[in-house]
Length: 416
Image 1 (cartoon, one colour):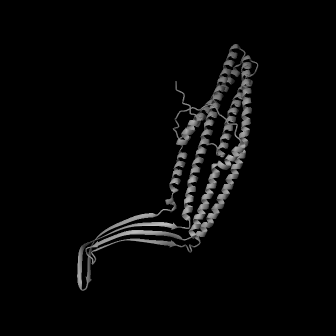
Image 2 (cartoon, rainbow, N blue to C red):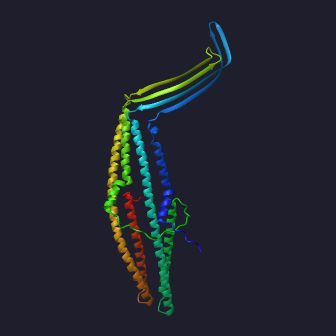
Image 3 (cartoon, rainbow, N blue to C red):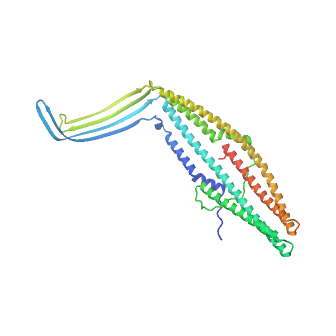
């Protein structure tokens, strides 16, 4: 007998997904890049020090005349060695380096928000997918139960035929209904298996990893509308990203405008030069020394290129402000729709639960009456189908309520 697959709880699935999901790992790497970039050196605060060295060897034939004396040298060797240590330190650039440092900090915060948004989205997706597996699993079980009821109906029909109180036509119809129920069960079972494969992929696991899920969809009916509204206005990651993006674009505008001011930098160098020449008047020369200076670069006219960039930056700020307003308005509309859906689904769960109890009792009565021959096969089949539909509507209502609950928490920034 094959062992039952291990139960994968929702908390364990979240643990695996948050650790292994590829998109989350990529977002974590992007945050690491942003943190590496948010440094004083990358913003231009620190000096740049470079060292260069050159070694040159030559073998030359030379012929020259000086003071009436001709001189010819063959295979004369000459060499030169040069080494320089240079340092450049930007002292002032119109405060551009300060704006650059602040912008790098904003980009780090944006990457952090993007990671948090990715984590929240993943958590919501895992929760919805997990409960979808429960829903499909319960629907599969409902169809399995319907197959058993149809088999029970056939047994009753066969008994009636043997006793001479039934008809062959009713028995054949019962067999056709059983085959239809089996086909529906097989289709739903295949759908359940496909959903499990997709869930394993979401968790970055092998699609062959066996597991089973719990059977309960727990619904939180205590969510408070005012708390949720305050949550999305403060904690929604899409809104926070829009705000951070606007701040970053404003810093970019200031950084561009800073290029109108002079740029002052300090340079210093220490150099060593040595040359040797067997065929020249000066056979040996060596110099060493230190140099330092200050450079000022003053922008005068660049063909209005800087003005064009500032104008484009102003337009980008306007677009970012519009995007922020659009995001806030869309979130407000989404919240209004979700809170209404959530409240309606809670009522629907109660109604469908009551309908399910009634359908179960009706089928129990129908089975006994069918066994006694006081109702027709069609009436029995209707009672059977009514129960199946009631079971499916009940589990779908609970699933839809859980989806609305999860989406509300995600929008409000309260899911994690």
